[in-house]
Figure (cartoon, rainbow, N blue to C red):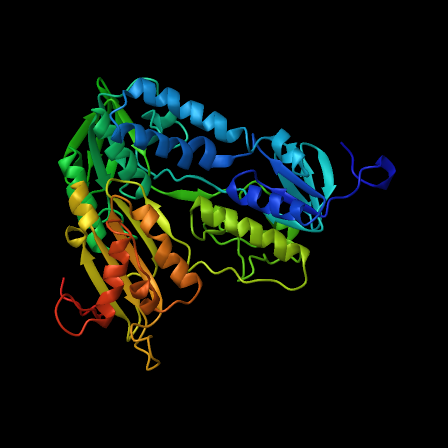
Length: 462
């Protein structure tokens, strides 16, 4: 392939490097604006989420919760992945006006990108190459035939036992799912608690639920070594104990994929850990080059990456740019119960912030469902003197509940629209629903007699 006037092929208005969520968001947004768009993908478009992340993991989790046999669950997993991938493949994207080029891309100079030996002009570009599993430097780990999220969904037989390294969202989700399939699971987390980025109370709930599911949870424990064993793998821990299992899953985070893109040749700067340096508009240090998604080190979620991609593409093609606002973006850990969060946590709230708290045991729908593990917590700004705004604006929320992933969007909308808590409290909610708990929690900001009342952040009795 050659580009230029002498070939009859018009130069692209925008080149998008990476076919995951951020790349798809960028390419589709640019094409809808009428821009000549080229998407370069090292592998079929769809990226980690479709093939190794959200889609297969949530399909597996759902099957485990419904008691589906493991073999049937893995078949359904592959069927769902194939169905969704078909809406993101090269043919579908070309029908949407995106020219897809399969291969590895690298900058060779400012404004030039090479793909498998072919050079293309790149006056405007969006880097959206995502991330890969982070593998800790543990002696013997490389020879232990460990699994990551990129390989665990290829299993066709349920392992009798499994050690999971990492107590973040991926580790907790898959530990619970495999335990519900009947696997003996040991979960090892170096931090003092699971889900370190979440509210401490959320970590407590998830830890208790995992233990009830039979997961052997080891927090505050580091892995010091790994080796093959007769049973499969032997893992040595910092507390001088060892754990043997048939399989080992490494779920210790992600690292940006930026090391083979030739970014230095284009003048694009990266942090020491590989994150591409971006400003509030997602622009890099090189004019015309933007970055989006996991490669930026910002919110590592599919929906956040897609939104960043859309914004990066739009900013690259117009003079009046928009800022990226991560604060109203929610995220969910799909354990049972689910853990959902948006905005600030109680501990991170600033001076004057107030917190309302409601245990799920006081939500009638949770009582009816027999799923009372968890709570709803709303963080609001300082009181205002204006009528009807006494609770302040919504600054954040944490919900731990069976349907937390659905319930979090109401506080997220409140944050995106700078809504006061009074609006949440005044809106009539259907009874009995899970979301009515959000209304009940918001009402605490206005209670003067009876019931619970909101307290200042970090001073509320736990």
